[in-house]
Length: 195
Image (cartoon, rainbow, N blue to C red; front, side, top):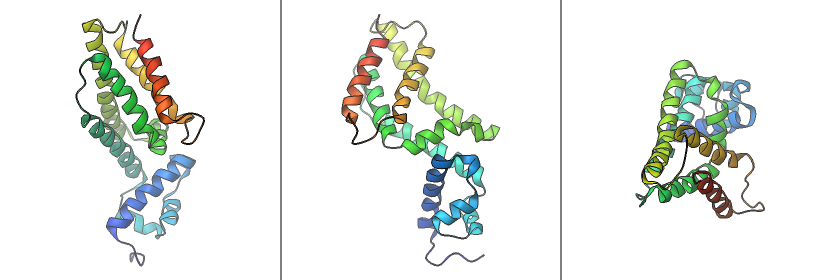
């Protein structure tokens, strides 16, 4: 099938991913068809297969790219002086990074169940690496006496759940700025790791 006039792979490929991201976040992966994605992009349905082999691969690529961008952005942060500084940096980074990507966050958490087992395992490995980075901060803080945490794994999961939950209610231009939210959440996270 001929490519739609004006369609170029370096332009259309990102548009396919952007349309899938938006539609999956709005309607859920299961409710979105390749035809809907094609219509949103402005190409014929068959043309999508020039950019992705199937809808499952599209979902997986969106999730994997999100996790790679998350970890790459975190690696670029300056090294903190101690565990307390590292925890504050993690808290603020997580809030800032995810506030700019609400659709990616929604899909990363709500659509895991729609990944096939192989794709699920890869995404879970990436997520675990990010979670382990926070747990390592907590372990370092416990070892240095800065934190008092009974179970660092549970504490790490609780902190991530609390921080990620901000995306369900925070809106730019709302009652609180992102900076104010960061300050409040850092205070809660800090208190949760001290006796």
